[in-house]
Length: 391
Image (cartoon, rainbow, N blue to C red):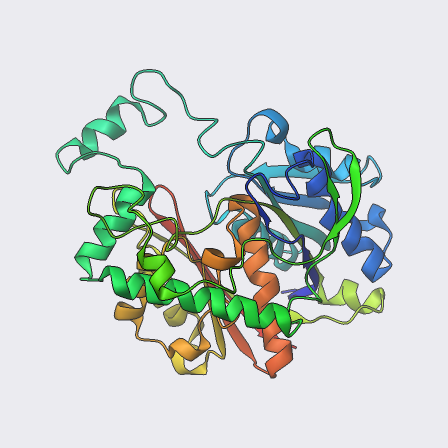
């Protein structure tokens, strides 16, 4: 069986809602990491067999198979294919899994896994039906009506905080650490190898002459006291606020994945290999607890012990998700999200999977670690887990 290896991963900076990436059309922004991968690695884009792109809100600028549109916008030959997938927040992590599996099966040699979400221009929920039963349908609604019915993710995060007895202070303290870690990582230039600088565009799409090269959402001047002053966002007297939730963000990311034999043929040095994959499903009401069984499952499948993991990236959809996972898995938290997470860096939904993968690989290289775990909760009650081994 072929080994699936990672040659390179890049991402745009995370742009705040209404911020310096909001003037980009989603297709153009999605094309930027694709262009950067072929330019940085000096490969013929005609060799790429497929681009698998995660995107959650597939409507408007992000509709009609944005992966194929981004391929063409990047200037790749028309022979290069593209397909778009939605596994909610784990979409581009799933794209990387599908890319690696295609290579491991021998059916393809070079695939780009990517992700995009322009949350300013295509708001979260814009693709949801407003008709009877919303997007879920009568049968699904009937199945969960006795348990209170399907709720928004913010309410799920509140439920998780209550189930695991997490206090508002604990949630805010974790969020403060995320910002401090991300701020330190930025000042120490730890993200420089993964971030591709992006020209800022005005609302009409014209370049302003400014370049964005760092994540916009990091608040190096925040404090536990400032976070404590924020009002609950989803529930009166609740614990979940804008400060201990992931940020609404614009961004794109992409990973160049190929067979080990093709990398050798092209004289490209693999940076990591995919060691294991796992999926987990949980109830769609609390919905965000999937990283707990996904982590247990991938450790059991891989034979790699928790203590053997050098680094872990778990998506900070909400602080309660990470802290509930911590209580169940009991990892060394000094190995977890060491450069901050989505609370500080932002969460451009479809792009977050390959963003986390980029940060994980770069930090393994910086610290000399061997194994890294990535896991993400997903709307509807699912989770992905991936282990990579640095080469």
